[in-house]
Length: 305
Image (tube, rainbow, N blue to C red; front, top):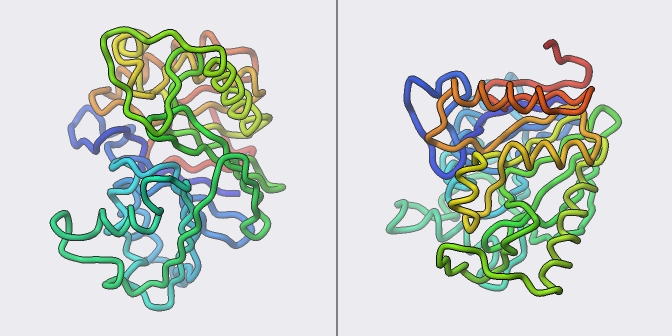
């Protein structure tokens, strides 16, 4: 298994001198395993990935795209993915089943007027959409995929990709599991969290257990760490976690390497360096903590401190 990071930012892409080391593109990760090309999320980093794939001597003719959810920062790179213009390319798109709109319709609406002067029928690649749900397990060749529910507005998925060569857990967007429970309804924020019912607390606990389970003994876990503790206290209704919360999940699950992810678009490289240093000092022995950066490549046994 080879994991390559193409986009690490949350909310929206940024381009400033103080974010060059960790990158300004929104979330996109490439996984090569068992002859498959698997893409996690379709943020603006997907454009860079598409260019790289088309420059290969034999560009992949089959691509699997796993979408955690369809907020803008996770699909905005999709229309600019170069393999979409290739007739011999077949793309399987997996994403959350919703009540409001089908996955295909959501993606089609993002590509159509007045947002873009195109539609799905203009694309040359063959697209197939698969609506999936939390708790589902399936195989992409030799890659075993498990989906779990993340605690994020209008719901989101988290993924575990497992092969004999490595285990990757991908949780780019989730709030913690002790205050706000997110579903399909908009959270009306009045400045403080509303008390949870016993049923809601049970749902949160079950959701957290599912997240820990898909992270169990993973070689690498990419986890939402957009907020500082102070930011979370002010914006718990946004559905994002802190580096402390990410580390706690990693420690409980026995993760080998925690990669802080979905960086706040206002967060500078130097600020991320300080957060990583703080978390590494707090981490249990054996847990490596880093902040994901564009261009990072992960292979089992390849980490050099």
